[in-house]
Length: 300
Image (tube, rainbow, N blue to C red; front, side):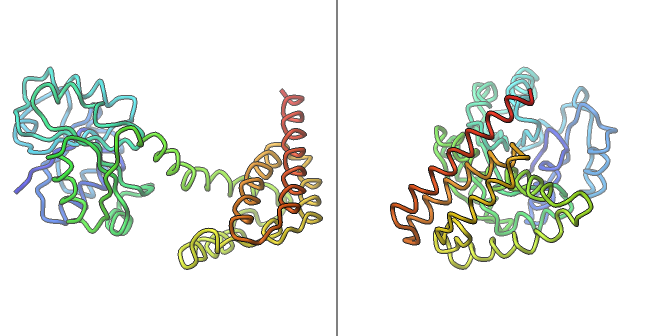
C-alpha cells in the first residue's frame, strides 16, 4: 500500500490526507515547524494522524513512498532543498507540491536526490478541509511532472473521485490565472457588488440567488448562451445609467467597465449584438474606464 506523508498540515494537506485515506491509501501523518499550532491540532482532529516537529525525527520521511509538500508557494523551493539535504530520502520516492502556478521544477533539489517530481493542483477552493470529500469528489485536478509521477497522480485522483487533467509546465501560470479569476475574483466581485447597496441595505444575501442562477445557466447552457442582461440586449441607455450611478464609486466603475467590454465581445459572439451596438457600448465603457482611473488618481 502506498504511504503518504505531508509537509505542512494546513487546509490542503488536511483535505488531501482525508480523501487519500478514504480511498484506501495509508497516510502516515504530517511534519510542521509549528506542531502545536491551530492548523496542526485541526489536522490531528480530522485525520487521526500525528503531526511531528519538522526539526525532529526523520523516521516518517524514510517510511513514506510519497511526500506531499503542502506549504505556501514561496516556501516550496526551500522545503525541497531542506528535504534534499536531510539524508532521509531514498530513490523511488515521489515528491509532490500542490501550487497551482508553479511547475514541478520547484522540486528540483529532491529530483537531484533521485525522487520523481509532480505538481498536483486540485481545481477547488478548500476553505474548510472537513468538507474535503464533498469538495474534491468530482473536482478537476491538474497534474504536471515526471512521467511516472504523473501516472501515479492520475491513479490517486481517480481513486478519490476527482477528474485528472494533465498540463504542460509552461501553461501553469495562465491556467492558475484562470482559476484565480473563476474563484477569488468572484468573491471580490461580489464584495464590490454588495457594497453598492445603501448602507442600511441587505448587502450580499439578495445577490447570492442571482449568482447561483448565473452559475446554473453556465452549467446547463455553457458560454455564450448563458449570457443575459442589458449589454447582451444592446441596451445602451441602461448601461449609461449604470455608468452615471457608479461615478461616485470609481473602483466599482473600473471593474464594471472592464467586465462590460468583455461582455460586449461575448454578446457579439452569441449573435445578440450588431457591430454598431458593439461600437457604441465599447465607446461608452472605455470612456467610463478613463473617468474611473482619473477619479482613483485624484484620491491618491
